[in-house]
Structures are given as structure tokens and as C-alpha cells.
Length: 460
Image 1 (cartoon, rainbow, N blue to C red):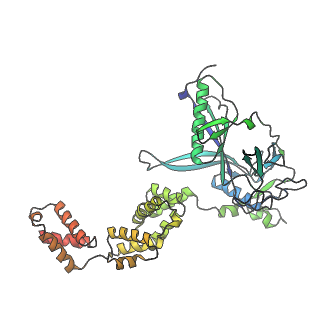
Image 2: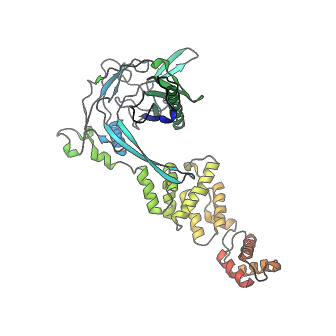
């Protein structure tokens, strides 16, 4: 067989994402959903696959799938079907899983996303990925392997936490048909997902370069070594023997209440226009609104949207202060985020509320404190969150000195103590040095505009 050069090859990656629906009860039964509940404490007769039990579809889960489909620009199928996927594994007592193989609830979507790229990571790069389909699928149980006793225990509460991802990877020459794919499982974080995909692409390229062929197999990612290894219990192609689920009718989604069949209770109907109205503001729209409304930089909009609660914090400060949005964003990004990261705190643990930050900025805007004092007050408030900015300014006598007579006295004192520097012709650098000395004398509390005017007068 002909060997292949690595530079000739391109990769194709498909992600199978298992996302847990945020619902109170399970997809096909009335059992509660409780993350980290004691094993097998949330199991109905149907979950345990007792003979004669029937699935009942959870309407909330259907609405969540439709909403996800709309957010990902999918076509929502007005009619979708359920299927049985057969396989024998200890965590699947029925011997089959109810899924949507033939006609899923949503198809053909796109996700356009942006990230910061370029040399300084401040250029917005926009990319797009295709969404093949969104399907509703019953959760299997969870296998807990007890190596000490050489046995496997089964928990039928629910298999996953919030998110699980399997990666399908293949490589081929441009213009050729796609290569044979492998499926990589046991990926437990976004970082490991990237590591697993990168390793698998390089591994397959090496196999083809060496004149070998890639096997269609399921592989497991080992987080310690960063390698993928074949899974022994998934060897060979499995025939899932899909068949229509006889206990569930076709799932119908209606455009509007008026198009639903007469006589059906509203609680039994999923209406597209109602779900569309409940769709929250999507991240890309939110970022664009922040940039256009407040005139902030695109890279700042990413931080505001990505950090939980930060956008609300920022908008609250803007509403309650006279300072402009650009000044507010500087404080939020530098002072607030700086201390949060330094002390490893989340925003909800911040000792300074948006209202308290707005108070500090208002004192500065009103000319009651200088910018350097404002930062000092921020640090003090962080240590003693029970106080107000005004209290700290009063207690520590940090208010701006703008009494003309007092400033004249201090400026005269500084000028008199530096006679060699104030003889003409004196440069701007000398004036700036004298201003610094006045601020040192007043602990940063002198009104800089007044100080400059007085010094210019005294040295001219």
C-alpha cells in the first residue's frame, strides 16, 4: 500500500454531545432528577424496566429540545419519531434505549461562534459549525466498577452530570472520500476533548503515513498519558437493530395554538411560537448589544458575557453612576476582576456590590476624591464590606483638598523648598515633579487642576 505524507491530509471531527436537560423529572418517567442523590434512590418501575411499564413523555424536555433547536438555527420537525436502540450492557436493564434515530426533533442547524485571536488575543475571529441533529434520548444507568471486590455496581438514577462528549475523528486527502472514523469516549472536560482530538488526528496520520489502515473502532481517552486506547468491551461493529418504539406515538410540534388539533388539552401540546417567545437573549446578540450600547471594546464584551453575573454587575454600576461606561468597564476589568482572581473568588463572593462601586465612582465624578484615592477606598471597602465609601473617606480624611488658600500655602512651601528647580527657563517635567510633591504632601487629595494653575502662577 502507498504511504501518505502528513501534510497532504486533513481531518474531520464530529462531536456527539450528551447534554442533561434541566427538568424536575426524567424524560420518560415521573422519577425526580437529583444530581448526586444516593444510588438507586430515584428509580421508578419504568426506570427499572419492570414488565408492563410504559414510557410517558415529559413535555418540559420536549420544549427544552425545541428551544435548543431554535438557538442553534435548526429546522424543527413538526413530526418526529422514537426508536429502540438495542444493546446489552449491565446499566441498561431493558436491553434497549429509547432514542430518535430515523426522524429526530431538530435537524440541519448552524452555530456561529466568535473567539479572540490574533497576536494580542484582541481580534474577534468568527467561525461556523454545522449541527447535524438534536435528538431526545433516554439516559442509561451508571456503572460503578469496584476493583477491590472485582464487581460492577449499577446506579439507575441517571448516568451523567451536566455534559458528556464523544468525539468522532477521521483523516483524508482533500478531494478523496472521508476516511474511516474512530469514536473516542471517556472525555471529561473541554481541555481533554481538545487533547483527545489532537492526539487522535496525529495517531491516524501516522498510521496512514506508515502504510497502515485506520480501524473503525471505539477508543478511550487516558487523561494521564494524553493517549487514546482501544476499548476491549466495544470491539467489533455493533448492530443496534433499530426498530420503531411501539409504546410512543409520533411527537407532534405545532406552529401556533390555532394549528393544534381541536379537543387536545393545552398542557399536552408543544407550541413553537410560545417556545420562541421564551428564548433568552443569545450570547452573540448580547455581546453586540453591549458594544453598540456602551461603546466598549469587543474583547471586554466577551468577558462580560462569559463570566457568570458580570454583565448584570456592569450594567447595574452604569445605571447608578455618573461615570461613563468606558470608565466603569476599566474598574470592573482591572480592580474588581483583579482582586477576584487574586483571591480565587467568584463574582457572587465579591465583598463590593455594584451599588458600592457606583458610590466610589460618584464620589470621584463629583470631585470629592481623586482617582488614586478612589482606588484606595475600593481596597478599604474590600477589607471592610460593612462600611460605605463615604464613611471611609470621612474616617480617613481622604476628601479632596480644594480650599484655594490651603493649596496656595502648600504650593508655596514646595516652591520655596526647591529654589534651584523653579528658576526660569523651567520645563514641563519640573512642573510635573512639583505637582507630584504637592500631591505627596496632601496624600493625593489636592485638586490637580487647581494645583497646576497655582504652580504655573508661582513659577512664572
